[in-house]
Length: 353
Image (cartoon, rainbow, N blue to C red; front, side):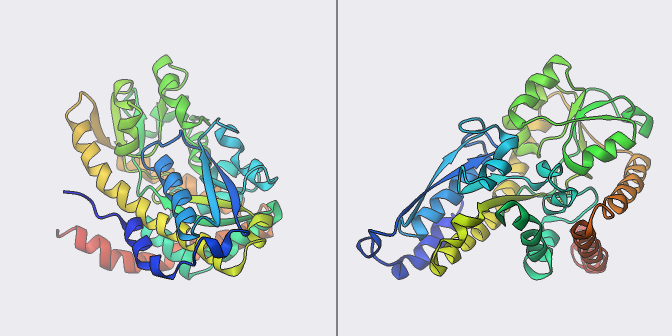
């Protein structure tokens, strides 16, 4: 059965209100989007393409967006600087890659034991999230927008069993952001690698373990062929938001209607990507269960220790500067307040389903 395409539906609803191409023949923009993902990679790469196509179609070609995958113009971890400097108008990536710019960036992707996708969207759209994100990125000549979410992730692929916190000692693991800092405090060795290099690094023993996304993307990378154990839950990334970063000068040059189109396209893709991952992770998980891997839950005492380390690290980075403190306080206050509703609503229901 074909999945109803949310983006196509949105286009149909507004088709009648888009002005004619002839009216805007002299008001056209050709934009580039650089990404941190392989071209057309399932979920993430396709999400970037969907965003580009949606902006192009909603604007009736007044903005045409061409997508460049990782390394087609810039390496995946140079997207931020390239867009900031005006090399491209748009970027599609994850904010935790930019912790070297500011530790506060990580709150806008995912932090260990942080918000679920539903909670993350609530903080961003209906609390202070986007306002603080814009404040942080303004110093870098960027406008940020949520433009995807992969859902709660898996805990990662390992070639040895994790029975206690001591099993993380000396473990070389590809894990970005604050999750990597937590691993380091637990005795592990965090490694930052772009997605395209993970399989080879794990296969050759350059790393002992890796997190990536979840069953959908992990199956596409073939990680089940080079690791024995697949752990859950994804304590390090419970609801990772994917960002669209927009060069501030390019965004501010737009008339108001085109700004609305760019913002609306980002919101539409944000919703669509989460739905895509939710559907495809289920299919991929069933496939992975049929292979020779072992799917295991992290021991409770390991998760408890990781949570304690995480809380300490988050508190420490809040003192980095005033903007980081402001973001930390907003994020943690929202997380602590939303817990009671999440417990009564989602958790209680799932426990009886």
